[in-house]
Image 1 (cartoon, rainbow, N blue to C red):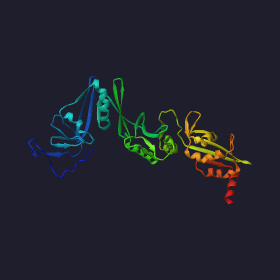
Image 2: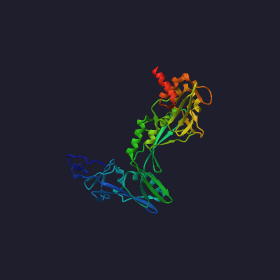
Image 3: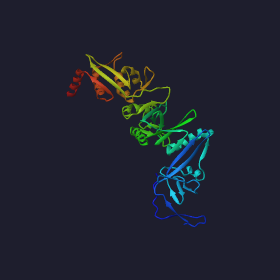
Amino acid sequence: ALELPKVKEELYLMDKDGWPVERKIELAAEPASILFHFRRNETETRYFPTIKYQNLRIEFMFKEAQIVSNKPAWLLLNDVLYFFDQDIEGKKLQPFLAKRYIAIPKSTEATYFEKFVAPLIEKHHVYAEGFEIKTEQYEAIPVVKVFYVDGGLSQIQLYFKYGEYIFPVENAHKVTVRLEKIADNYIFHRIKRSADWEKKQLNLLLALGLKKTSALFSNLEVTSADENPSYAAINWVNEHIETLEAAGFEIEQATGQKRFVFGASKIDLEVKESNDWFDINAVVWFGKYQIPFLSLKQHILHKRREFTLPDGEVAIIPEKWFSQYGSLFSLAEAGKNLKLKKHHIGLINDLAEDSLANITLERKLQRLNDFEDIA
């Protein structure tokens, strides 16, 4: 709403001959309100506004009223300067200073409803006859959508689901209108949105390391360096998947040839001591998928990031795993199972201290570690 200006001096209207104080002008004591009316029948739709001031309707058509400011609108009527409780442009009132209504023929109503009426309903109070305006409110869901670019910089897009409606993050209106036509009937769906809440979701993603690609576009990218920027967005989602899901985010991927797995990546290692060996049983988790750790041997040794799962989805092996587990595969004996000779106890200790894997040690092996610490 526009605040009432503080005017120390009195205001006057100049006459046509240049006399500066022909008539004194009073400032309205409070904002006026505007209601836009639409009346649709079989042949046309009539459109006109009404104005209320201090709960009383005031007549302004054919009263020699003047629009003295367009944005925001200021209306001079009967030596009173009115302002309004909504951010409205004066050009929306100008035609009605000398006209009762505007008629929109049925042949052009579809375009008119989409281009003019829908945006008007988003911002202003509207009363309609002959079509329906539905105000709807939903529990919103934030969605992170990953755009994979092979050989380029993958990006992330944030948008919001309100029921069946989808809105991008940069379009943070308090109300958004969607027009639906069923046979000869029009329904304007007036969806209430939470602009402050939407901004908080964006700020959360920025706090987790994303940055805007530019001031003009809504896409986000990962700030941390990755040796392969194609995987940067996917890795970011996987690293923060628990935080995102706890905050109510849904994860989606743009349509493409490759379908990637989104979820935390972890390894469960169980080390058992035999007479001459350490037997290592290990499984890998990519999100909800579990596979034998040994399946990654060639990928780890040859630093291949993409591992194709049985259902065709692609898991991205974290970069840290190559340095952490490369030695394990290099030193392990060849075979269907992972075996390490006992003099590689130091490697087992390194794995146990690392947070990348969950390590289970047999009690006999644990005592051997304790003995080395004492020695």
